[in-house]
Amino acid sequence: MPFGYASPEQIMRDKADYARKGIARGRSVVVLQYVDGILFVAPNPSRALHKISEIYDRIGFAAVGRYNEFEELRLGGIRYADINGYTYDRSDVTGRGLANLYASNLGRIFTESIKSLEVEVVVAEVGETKDGDAIYRLTFDGSVFDEHGFAAMGGQAEAVATRLKERYRESMSLADALEVALTALTEPGGERPPVAQLEVAVLDRNREHRKFLRLTGARLERLLAQTSTPAAAPPAAPSPSGDTPPPTGPEGDVDDGSSPL
Image 1: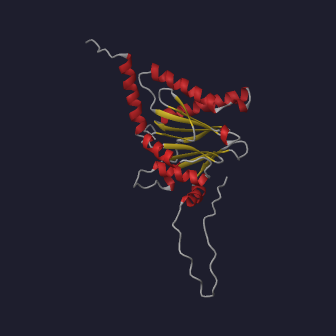
Image 2: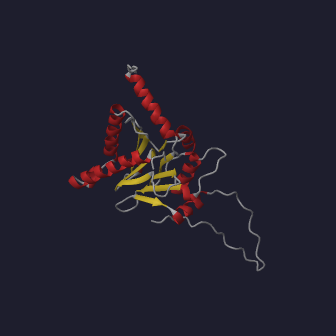
Image 3: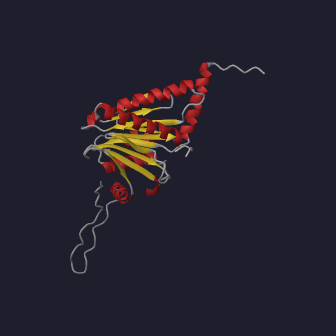
């Protein structure tokens, strides 16, 4: 029985549609700049399968799609960074170099393999100053986008990016940036994911040596407490002794699968 003919254009369209549908099933990830570096936020019910990770001293990685596929990319990026940092100098390992490596691999797999990878990736590098920060978003076909300020991918990425664009501003504090990210990730009228289902990390330019820091537990809860903006309360009634109790507030210090995610 003869095989039916499909044009190269049709094959590419089919592979692209297949990859887009797989990526859209995953939960969105947001990456955005704040005054001291770059923030990563992702709803993630798994505590073992990370969507956000460290690649090298100043470089972070975020991904959506099939975990087994983007985990292989992450490990390949770590090997590339370690070899080049050891062979030459640690400063020679850059986000742009990693983005080029991923773009080459993704593009080759998309054109040569029967099935394209169902992944979308962000490589972010924090600089000595805000102007040195870089955010690169890579799609399943190897396309690279040099994002400015923020990036969104996976799930309802277009809607999330629109909400980010409406609220993002330069030089936000970490708490404000987290508030913007969570608002963008939450559907209008919907509920934000609980703290236990949030994966949050930063590339903090003020940290020594390794800039990547994962925010979990009490650290994240204290930061989330700063994002709340309650309405102004009436003045407290004086106590029987005539003394007014001092105001209180959050401390705000921040210490140091195969299914789509």
